[in-house]
Image (cartoon, rainbow, N blue to C red; front, side):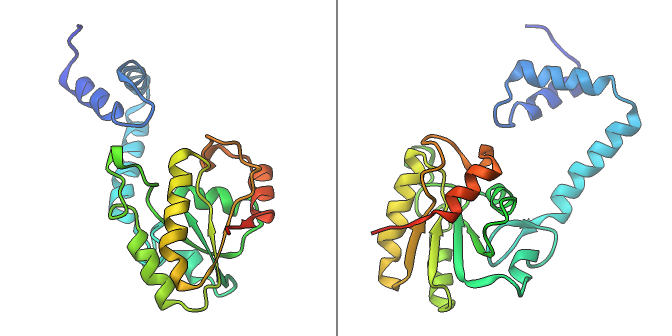
Length: 201
């Protein structure tokens, strides 16, 4: 295998840690960056540094935010009776783009997948349970998880565990194809799924 200077090798290894990026793609990224002006590289490096320094997690909904509490949780115009449970922070952006939802959110941080170590103790199930106990005004919980096997398992788990709290549960309508993730759903399909959500019996 060809040997590269240490800075190239280190950056290839870093890019290879990104989802969907293998060694060849990582090397292509590095070669592209080597052709860019040093000023552009400095801007990129500064942006990455600020990402780690300025972005934290909202203590209420667990989305990423630059504020102490995210702007959605601070919005007095949101409907406090509805809570939408999603897997990842990026799902909030996708749902917000539909303009169909005006309640609050809770980010689990993943779905149940014991093979990869995603157990109930790892996802933010306990935090969700505590929030529902503390916020009695929440009447409906929308389980807006991706329609994968892991998403379905997580929905069933949450419904069973949280049922004693006496809330109404709903899920996204089947406008989303089985096996897809919310990240790649278009706004129209996701909007239909939100507006046609159904109760879980």
